[in-house]
Length: 178
Image 1 (spheres, rainbow, N blue to C red):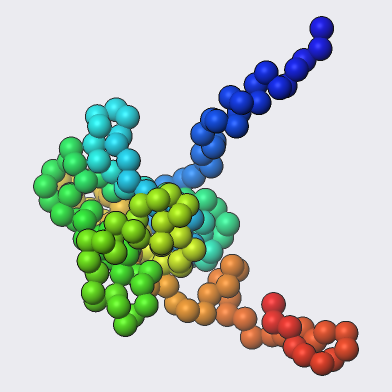
Image 2 (image 1 turned 45 degrees about the vertical axis):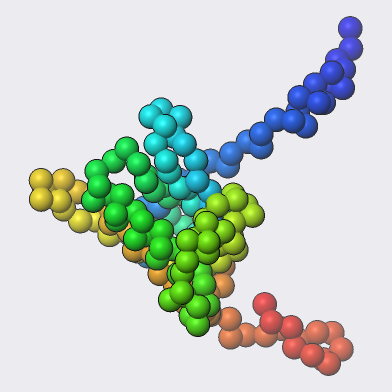
């Protein structure tokens, strides 16, 4: 008896893409290239959430390194009002960090909707952001990670170094940066 893949071809073509395994953003200062951003309803409680997925380009973390795949999720319902307010502020910071400085102050609801929805098609995709995650202690003496989202420096390469060297081509007619 032979195996016929054709009987599964339609099901495979119509299935969802498998998710990339990603870690939570850990303590440290990170430059992250956003790869996806979208809103969804949580499966357990039906809470409204936004997830940002990306790749670390540069970091000072001892736990994470450049090229690690990471994620961050914001709950917009089903949590305390102060958490919703904080999450909304962080999402606005995320959006403004990806916009040109000339227009970052003019964030509208339409800009936010386009920026953080659509998965891999979201406007923020491809942008570099700087994320600072610091360990803090709550009033109840419990440790937690506090996140800040801001503009990334403009001179960042995948290794975290600023490019200053060039390679010359074989005919010496032009320099090729790397």
